[in-house]
Structure formats: structure tokens, C-alpha cells
Image (cartoon, rainbow over all chains, first blue to last red; front, side, top):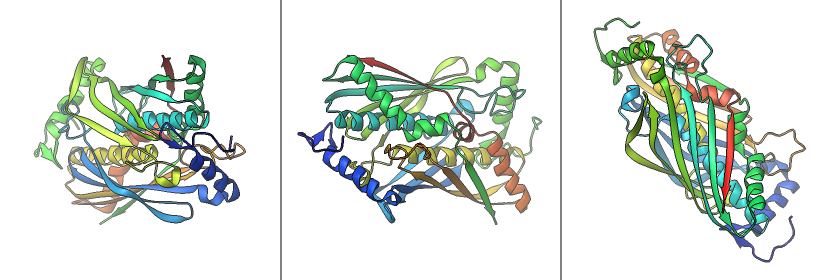
Length: 190
Length: 190
């Protein structure tokens, strides 16, 4: 898998660099330790804004090419001003984006040229949980998230399906959603 | 808690509507069933774009005031073009946004005027997992997410801290991150 390839750029993925990166991590596993960050500021009501800029990785402070700001709010039906998507909708973007990036990488590594990858994500949630109106049987979060991929490329159906399966196996977001992740919350006042 | 209040709008939260919404859900729990959605399109390499527009709730098809598009990519150090934040960084935005919206709502319901709510979120991840270079001991996702809130308002420290605690207890995103959520993946080819 880490040998040279005839077509180093496939699906927009620089496979030569991808394999070189894997080799570099094998040689020094410490460079694989990353910390991603966001800062958030409350604006009014349920409306707030996050900034994503710097992160740590490859044993050094790093920065994205550009600073990204993203807002969130609740829709009117949930007593917000609907200035932006809800926090839970960003989870749907995250899982689609993570699986799709993985599909492109895996396809490139396996020599499959993709022509189309789209997905729809649906998250079912019963708000009795967050409203505190359940007897405890209704959870606060999504009861289920369903991702439906449409994939086209120069490979048979089974090969295309296996790209998604391999992406799922190595997906950071899939892991965070489907398995418990510790979340520590500190509060500084005044 | 659901009685009338002297100041119906506090922290930008319309508490009268908030309490009326809770009463409406108590009268008809079916209106609390929501489905949120995102559609994603692969662009090139690890770069892709999601659209967030319609959702289902209160027993009807609903639509956000505006359509939101959000991109994701990997940084150069992870063999991407760094056109946008990584998928896992959107998880950090989601948890900060969800907890912050909850803090504003809970503060309004408890008669606390907030003057400042900011937070930083840090997610530690060892990429040996997603690189497939671990012996299985390193998970794909975040090993820990840490949220640090800075809160100011017209209440004592303990009251301000309890706002965050109550928000955590009713947070959809906190639940999804800290507890297992089923994610079903379907693939359509051709």
C-alpha cells in the first residue's frame, strides 16, 4: 500500500504525499498527536458564534490558511431567531464531511477514480428530552443518525461500497458519535 | 417555573414564549419529534460542502430562514488543501454552541441577566487511530474534549456555575458526544 503509484494525484488526493505522511508517522508516532480548538462567544438568546483558527499537530503550533467563523442558533419554533443552523445540525455536517473525505482518500489509495459522492444525513431527535418533559426514557440527543451515500466511479458496486465501509472504520467523527467521548466542562466566573 | 414572569425577554430569550412552548409540548408530546437534515457533496480530495435547509418538527415540514452552506477539508499537514475546518472541528463548535444556547435559556428562566458568555473548546486526538497505525489501543476519535466557560452576570458564582450544569444536563450535543448514538450508513451506487 505504501509503494509508489502510477498516478500520484487521484480524486484530488496526492497519494504520494498521503503515503509519505503515513511513513513519517510510522517513523515518529508523536507527530500524530493533535489538538483541535474552537472559541465561542454568546451573542444573544440562543445565537452564538465560534471561531476556528489554530491547532496543534506534528509537534508544533499550526494555523489554518484562513480563520473560519460559524454561527449557531435555534429556529423560531424552538424560541430562537434562526440566524444559523442549530448546534445538532453541525453534527450531521461533521459525519457527512468525515466519511466523504475518507471515501476520497481510500478510493485514491485503492486506485479508484470517483466521479460523484453525495450524501444525505437525517438525525431523529425527540425534544421531550431536552425540554425536561420525559420521564427519563427519552435521551437528549439524536435517537438515530442515518447517512445515505450516492457514489459513482470506475469500480464495481461492491468495490464502491467497500470504500464507504473502510472510511467508516477509520472515521474520527463516526467514532465520537457512536462511542462515548469524555467531555470535561470547566467554569470560570466573574 | 411556567408561571408568568415580570421580564418576558431576558438575555434575548423570550421567556413567555419559552414557557408557552413547554406548555404546548406537555399538551401534545408529538410536536417534540424533530428530524434535522444535511446534504453533502464531495468537491475534490478531502474538500466537501454541506447544505442545511429544511427540517421536520411540530408535526410539519419546516425550513430555516436561510439556506446555510458549510465546507470542510483537511489541512495541508493532513494531505488536504485546507479550504475549511476539519470535520472534527465542527464537533467543537457544536458542543460550545449547544451548551451556550442552554446557558442563555436557563439563565432567562431563572431570572439571571448575563453580560458575557465565552468558551474555549479543546479536543485531543491521536491520529494513529485514523491512520490505521495503532495496534487497536488508540481510538479514531477525540480522546477527550475540554470546554472552558467564562461567564459573567448579575448572580453569584455558584448560581452562574449551576447554569452551565443545568445546560449540560439538557444538552443534545453533550449527550451525543458522551453516549453512544446509532449511526446507520446506506450506500447507493451507480
